Image (tube, rainbow, N blue to C red; front, side):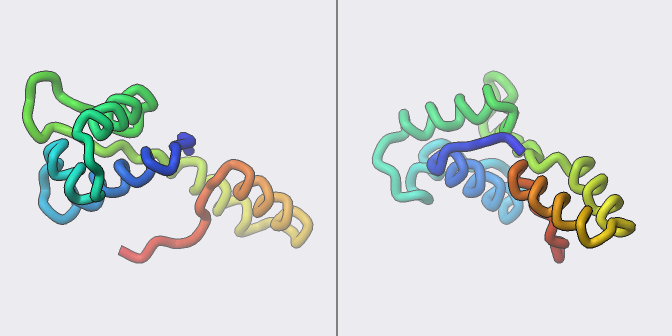
Length: 111
């Protein structure tokens, strides 16, 4: 998983939830208002950093074009779960510790 600062994680999560709820990405002003921030330029900086990190994509010269990228590496989670299905207790403990170090969420998501 890509490591994000607390503010970057807030911005990323807000944008992901907004896209899920509205089907389009928010404007920078909507992100600013939605998170109670006072500076649109700070939001722009966080978004630019998220784009650089690969957590967001943006189409140039297009409004509301932010695209949220899955930063959880689902293929890694699948490999961990596959190995855990046949692992011994000792191996399970090692896999859990490894997942924690790598910040991999092995819980099942209910959607």
